[in-house]
Amino acid sequence: MPKFHALTPAAGSGARMGGDLPKQYLPLAGKPLLCHSLACLCRHPAIDRVFVVLAPGDREFAQHDWTPLGAKLEPLYCGGATRAASVFNGLMAANAAIDAEDWVLVHDAARPCLPFDALDRLITDLREEKTGGLLALPVVDTLKRGDAESYVVQTESRDNLWQAQTPQMFRYRLLLEALHATDPAAATDEARAVEQLGLRPKLVMGDTRNLKVTYPQDLALAELILRSL
Ligand code: CTP
Ligand code: MG
Image (cartoon, rainbow, N blue to C red; front, side):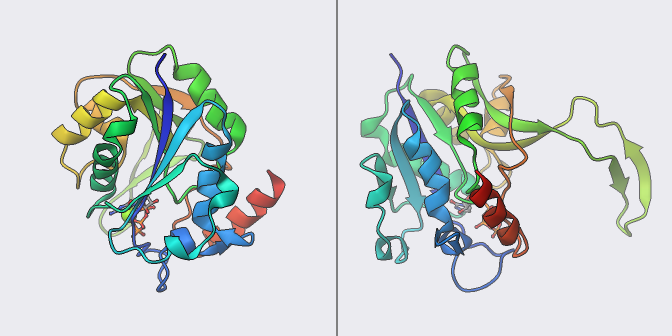
């Protein structure tokens, strides 16, 4: 039986957030933001190991007590220059613990409010799939294409358009092959790398609460969501 593992890239600098402390360590509801992002993964009974990819020079992780998250957690100090490089390096470093056909769920450190139900839906909906897939949300806003001066060029149809979230779940061997073949600067998510091999990841209904913390104003919303989960 293939196993399930999680891998969380947490080697970014949080440039859009600003400040000295990378956003994954900012305090959120009394804990580092990263702690919430990992907690949901550690809590799911199907998930075997939870790898967290840190920057090689990270000194912050070791300052915190992670024992409440249990024995599944394993830090890997091998982050790269881009998100895709961090994921690829982490997959390589975890090689001994993962079989080729095992599933890997890649989940951003920057998404601390993943509801357990959404994670469970992803695993349940994809475990019999060949390729894998991702949590995503149908686009609800009206879409405008603008020009360089921010004037509307036209209104775009939102039919069949989805916003990608994480986790994204693929087989270990496929993920390595896809990321190896891709340009790390262009691959903003794992699904895109897999698509470029000519495969079609499945879209699984995500959750609006699974927001990505990017700008300072996202923190207050994330805190409200965490308190309501
Ligand atoms: N990430 C990573 N290695 C990198 C860049 C990003 O592991 N070289 C991780 C981040 O830590 C984050 C996730 O990828 O959990 C999604 O990236 P993003 O939200 O863009 O985070 P940052 O790159 O840190 O933020 P910014 O783009 O504002 O600098
Ligand atoms: Mg980034």
